Image (cartoon, rainbow, N blue to C red; front, side):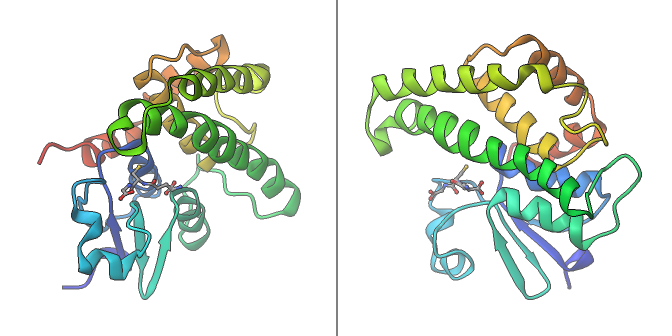
Length: 211
Ligand SMILES: N[C@@H](CCC(=O)N[C@@H](CS)C(=O)NCC(=O)O)C(=O)O
């Protein structure tokens, strides 16, 4: 049987996995789903390593094309499929630049430089090594960087409407909440509002389902 819309998604159980599930829900797209959990051994089977030799999830396949990296996956989906009213995908260079400024800030400064350090050397210290100074420094950096943009955060990150930047930001704020990192006021209100979106809730049910 072929995958609905030619789409197959691997990955469950973390905020990075939530991102593609959420974008697919916003776009109203059905898809084949393999609930592969990171660090379960499922990402290191010979079969999975043929799909992603870097043994990481999420992975999306669309037809014959395989895409890794959660941010690249959700951006691709917005470009490749019709977008409903209420989801903003910029088609012009200036709009794309304003959106990408948020996206690159979130994935590089909030995710990779801050939250992933906290996770790797806190919750996953049995794998990656204990580094309490680095963990505290990363939490401080997250607070400082998010605090510096808090006055730019409204109901959505870009004024044109809901976008992939919101998926990236909200998943980082979910992650910060898990790590008990307090949020500045606008980010906290934005986070509470975003969690009411039906597509977010549908995606959580899929990405965090109990097997
Ligand atoms: N930058 C990547 C990070 C992907 C990543 O690190 N995924 C983790 C789970 S959140 C994973 O698959 N770990 C399994 C492993 O390292 O074997 C993305 O955003 O997609």
